[in-house]
Length: 434
Image 1 (cartoon, one colour):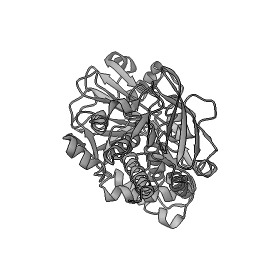
Image 2: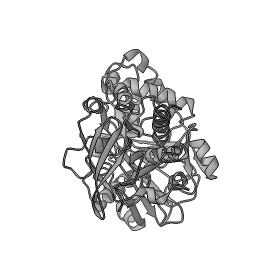
Image 3: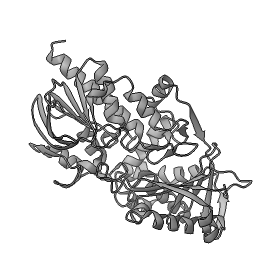
Image 4: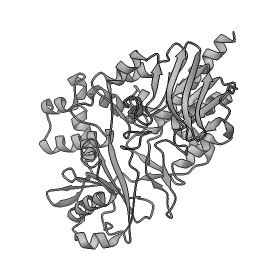
């Protein structure tokens, strides 16, 4: 491998942020090399095509109508399908429609503004709401944000709620061809020789206007050099202990970034999909989601409106962390136990109805080390600091750098990739006197 290319910009990470930055910088005429530790592009977007319809092992939904995603979908001619906003609620042995779900959530979280920036658990202790409403809202906040209620910032939740409202964030869409089709469009037309897969970065040595990246490649150790660097790896990798697989060491250290990262937390999710031989959950009450607060798998969803025999199980935050080190067989047993209670089917019958389980362990994936980020108290400022360039030389992108309320989403990653590329382009133009 030729490590001595003349490079303007190095990018670490071929997820949504890294690919977007690459596309933008290439369009600006800059020489770019992208380094990716995995043998594939896409990061936390991972689509399995082994069935008749795409199986999303990572990111699945386009949340609302974000300004960054819609133009890509249009240019790539990717069709989206809206998931119905229909929920069932399972509590105390009863499964009932829950048409008031969002009203309940909003009634509780609508009181955040007067609470200041405190941990969500502390907010819940003081808020005026029925006990069941508090339980439902806490389950939603922890599950959706993959968070601990005693850590996540109420200010961050309020800002996220406003940002979601601006893009109709309660509406959920799937890309019919699979989420990875968006990733493939981002990479389309870019020089394949500039993408280095299975290239694990270990050290970054830098001074203003110069970086050297030490990486392990299939052909051995390699040093890549460039004038600018974009780091788009997940927060879990930035937090990884020195010497751990995938961990990156900066020399000199970025002390300001390290302090900012301490205000951000890595969320954990267990997500798995089970293909059944029949759709036993179908009834007169067609639904997209089932909420089951006290079950080990608190959320289930169908592929509605698509016809599919697949159910998705989701456990985020503390619920997910209880399941992290379980095997696929143990996860399946937990899932069947929960589904047995929810749908009043025998465990043996449900086991016999299972066709296949699909699962990717993001929490123990060394190049991810969790699902996505969330801000602790004061964390929005930490995310903003993380997003700021270091001496116009090292730039950061990825969903963890979002401080405007989209953290944890693909559109936050896309936005950050565009922003980093625009900042770098301005630096090059300024240095060229343009």
